[in-house]
Amino acid sequence: MASRRLFSSLLRSTLLRSPQEFHPPTTSRPFSSSPFSPIAIRGLSRSEALTSFESNNGFVSELRNSGLASFQQTAMFGPSFSSRFMSTATDSIGFSEDIPNPVPDVPPRIKFKRLDKTGRHIMQILNKEAVEEVRAQREIPDIKPGYIVELKVEVPENKRRVSIIKGIVIARRNAGLNTTFRIRRLVAGVGIESLFPLYSPNIKEIKVLDKKRVRRAKLYYLREKMNALKNQ
Amino acid sequence: MIQPKTHLNVADNSGARQLMCIRIIGAGNRRYASIGDIVVAVIKEAVPNMSLERSEVIRVVIVRTCKELKRSNGMIIQYDDNAAVVIDQEGNPKGTRIFGAIARELRQLNFTKIVSLAPEVL
Image (cartoon, rainbow over all chains, first blue to last red; front, side, top):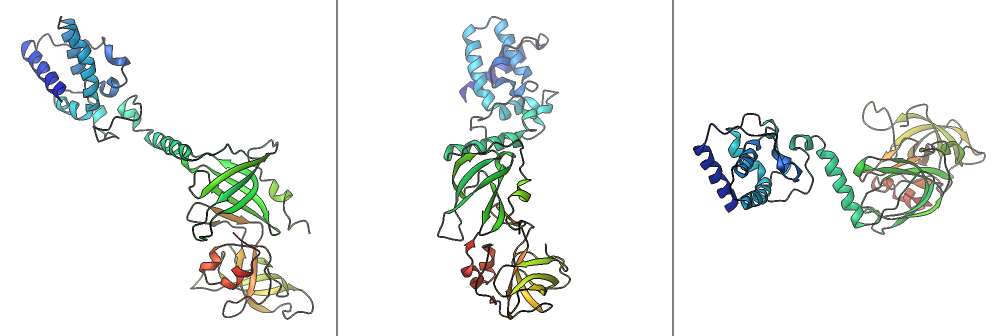
């Protein structure tokens, strides 16, 4: 917090001192490499230009280092910090939309390229995170069509729990967290196809028993081939 | 999605072999019947020398459909044929044995006798 005050006081002093010399050298961007600075390329260009202006004008070089550090710190509070400059800055289109992480105290867990661009594929990022969370919890093997697979499914209504389902995977549909796969099996003389979400918490265990060589991604031809009822 | 004119297999040993649906029991102009619905059917083919005869109108409950049955946990079950079990007015099955797998949803619909006789409950 102290860095913020220091920063803003510095900026105010420079503004008072030399208003006409203030033309931001926007070409010189030493901060573009740091991961947090591009949060506010447009809105904070004034401030980063000021810091480069200060460093170019022979302020203490450690100020530059501390400026970097404090800049990074303040970049975390970026949204609220830059809002101070929003009234003066003209082209701050990037801040017109809502920031996905409104809490400034939480360190951003995702890499931002540009704030407005992240907003477009935020669902993709959330999906990936949810999938990783489930994968870290339990081990889910790779399931491809043609695998013979044995599942242990918990049925909450049954209370007697785990039923074992064994069959051949005939299809797999990738959709992030909603990835599903279809299993075909013969039960008591009737062919049954079941579709399961891969990351469902009801699936307790998946075991791959055998892998058949197939030349297709969806094995729907097995409906005619593996049909116990039709052959009569 | 069973509708009138649909042929159904019979999943028990009541004596019928093939049925044809003629009406769906329920409110109003119901178009389709799925697992757990009661349907009026006529016997198209029967096993000889048993209590049920051909062209007899009876009530049946649907137990298997080719149209998938969706569950709230994301699971979907789909059978290879359409089948029904012959019942009487109370809902008790007329036969003594059930063939094939039965979906769990029938238990909630008070067909407990059918579920208990089933060789496998999915």
